[in-house]
Length: 282
Ligand code: PAF
Image 1: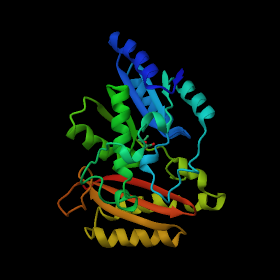
Image 2: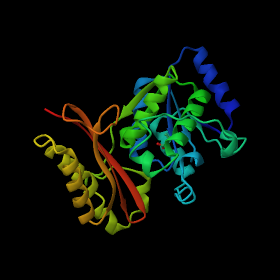
Image 3: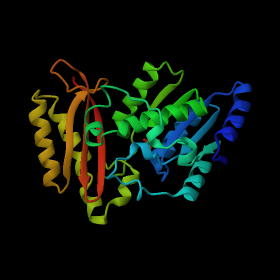
Image 4: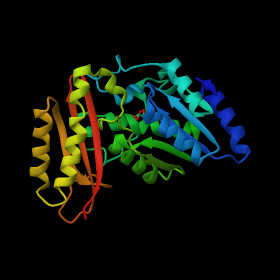
């Protein structure tokens, strides 16, 4: 596996592959890779001839009081994991390469509606930062397909909407969340959990599961979501939000909607954890 920091070296390599008619898959990441990321690389390998990954802790998607400084950076271990998973090329740009004029003078991509609530509300500007960096990375790599984890369900909808709205010729592949045996979704932010908090954190996925069952026989979505939030709080976490939404538009679900998603975020100690579950009402 080759690693490059520069856009020109990356493009030279990818152009050679494109001239040979090879199909290119892209897996953007912020590093500190776990099995959830490796599942993306494995899916990419199944669907394409060459896999390009990127590691870039994107300053534009972090708020002023967020954890960009302490976000775990584990480049050498990440390189080993990507190599073992069969990644062909790794792009590791610096902020100066991605944002040469600085963040203030950078053009940006704003995806309306799907970016607005939930994590968009709790983390103002977050999805603008995600859409902008993913758009830039797509323009740099120009992949045929790109893989994203469904743990970040709202992010997947933001990127899918961007690709459709801006007619980007890229297929977005959404890959199932990888979980620990306890049900806890794998996340780089699980590193912030103490051993005690690690016992508490599965309450998030457990209560989402509870809510998914409850809405099959009761259409009081708002009341049930409030109940789930209090269960999460009683378990020792602090619910940021838990909502039952239309699976594609992410608008609050109405009684007639059948394809739904439960979106949730909660604080557990220093970690802000997110999770979700798609539900089809039968
Ligand atoms: O999901 C992530 O790790 C990031 O939001 C992404 C898509 C790599 C953009 O920085």
